[in-house]
Length: 323
Image (cartoon, rainbow, N blue to C red; front, side, top):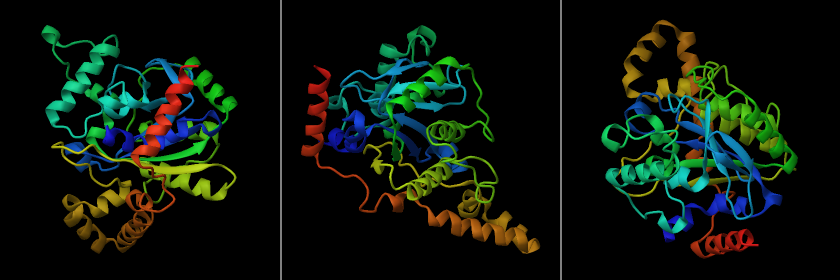
């Protein structure tokens, strides 16, 4: 329980009051074999005033509800975007008291399959003989078991949230994932830009024009510096302890090439033959080092609260929801 209260601190704090509602970019660290090959991580959007009627339909939250996480996925249920309530998205459970203090790989699989059976079986049906199905649906829940997540939130109004709900509910929701131009970070960019036009943009230099989660966060932080009148917050949702392998630092496209050992020898050879290319990689290294979510998250501006303070926030939400 102590762990669940602590890791929910920042998100619960912003969702506790409609006056402080936000759109929040979730910058998620890479993990596993694919994360080692492509360490750009994942991006999702958390909306504290928006909730889900279903994974493909949005509505305004009722009192006491804590919002929804929306993201674009590759090969999950055939839809372009899917929405999952905040707590299940992070921990694959419905109540804070159910969040485990530590987990194994087997624990995570059981938690995800249990939540799928209760809430998502229409979209993710059982496998043969009612077994847990294969596939990438596991990305929909329990994200904090696999990786550390950095959250960058900026305030929203009721009118902005209502327009966003109407926009997503009215448009076609069919698979549109493309790694280069329609990836998860592109979805996050368009969502934030819907609220604040041009707040998030691509980087032709650092990422060769490919939208990345790290660039989305860097853009949003820069936008907040230019708009000090808007309430902005940064907080960290740590990976749940246990035997699940730890996630790794998130990187941009060229930064991934420069810092990856598997690409080191080929890049050195090319850089020697093409000094201009080598200089570009060196600048990409510098640019990537300027914005490190792990360093940003260590600054005093990050929201931090002890278990007692968060318990009070949770209780306030519960009472508000019972009116």
